[in-house]
Image (tube, rainbow, N blue to C red; front, side, top):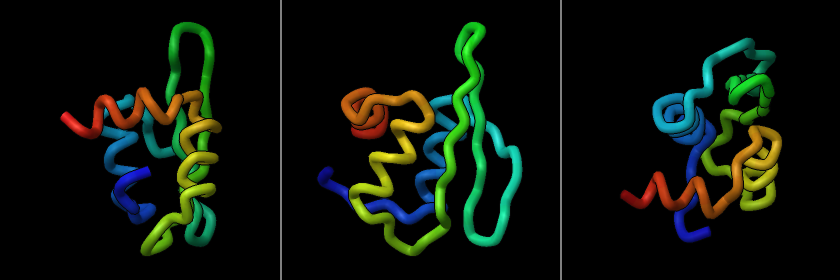
Length: 76
């Protein structure tokens, strides 16, 4: 991972580029969802100032995204 994102930045990217939409928020954790075909992926993103690398990867994995796929879109 070459860049460190805040939770807020990651939520924006997932919403704009990957079709996630806001479902709910509990405290500092935001729940996002997207539908791909007949599958639904839900992920949780903590709104921390900086996301730890493991937290970043886990949020992508929960959302059904590969890290390589994420970087291809973001680095454009």
